[in-house]
Amino acid sequence: MTTGHVIRSGTPTAAGDPHRVAWIDTAKGLCIVFVVMMHATLGVGEAMGAEGFMHTVVAFAAPFRMPDFFLISGLFLARVVDRDWRTYGDKRILHFVYFYLLWLVIQSVVKFGAVSGGSLGGFVEHLLVSLVEPFSTLWFVYMLAIFSIVAKLARRVNPVLLLAVAAALEIAPIHTGWFLLDEFCARLVYFLAGWHLAGAIFRLADRATEKPLPALGFLCLWAVANGALALTPAPIAGVSTLAALPLVSLALGSAGAVAIVVASALLARTLAGAPVAYAGRHSIAVYLAFFFPMAVTREVLIRTGIVEDVGVVALVVTIAAVIAPLVLERLVRRTPLSFLFERPAFARLSPRPRAAVQPAE
Image 1: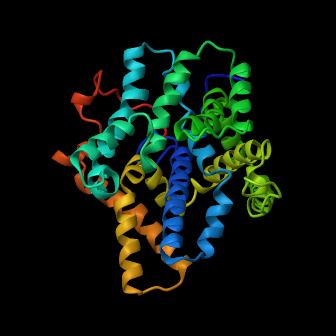
Image 2: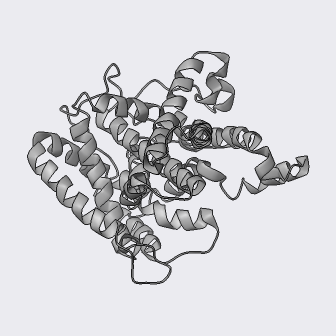
Image 3: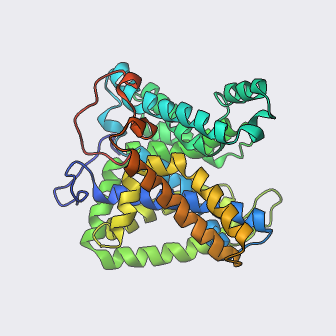
């Protein structure tokens, strides 16, 4: 086990940018698509009062959708965790705090009536509550700041002990009703695994590209096992599927994260991987802004009745919700509105560092 990571000379970098690792961008692209897909599909299903084929895809992805996102987010932590608090805090904490607070205000203004009860006082109360209970889809950004603080404080703790404690938190049936605490316990182990097992993860990606046939065989076996457990109801009250059972959840989350790494390593070397990697490079933009085009597209499709199939509507909404933020990010780049997706100088504790090998932030 190591807190560092190895990037072999054979590891492909992103097209046009030698400072990025291609498969990591691809992995983040896959992750953000699955996240948007979940919100889009469940929203469409609720609005139309039915389910479609996309609900099956969402259920299949449930065991690994967030675990691999957190694992990828922790991969390069070893490069910065031992730096001084000012430098580390700027890159790994303030970065996420800035985007959370900015988009908390933006999303809340858009949803003013729903979050405020129609009053300014209600709006202010909502913002204050959102400082301790993450708001809506922004919880992932909030959690990354929390995990980064925990990692910095625990950097001298034995990695085996740290991972064991985090695994125990994931396995334990912790359901306090406080979303932040519950998700912290459920996701911490994957973030720490990305940090402490980074070397093994990079070697796994290299091995997948060196031996694609065994890698594809593994993906097939994983898909069958994951699907069987994720789509089978659990015989225990309060547990949705077999995949959500204690221990099984941790095993499937870990296996799914490995599968995403393997699939991304293979996909990154193909033309089909290019658009996925592009979404990964700008995943922060998609994550922050997808809520609005998702809601608009869903409303238009349902009101007009152009498409009646629930699954097709969910698919179209997913595509629109991924593409629209990418278009917006490209339009505002190097304009006064670039602060929406790029942290400005006034929100930094130190000058912007020179590019380094990193995943999409």
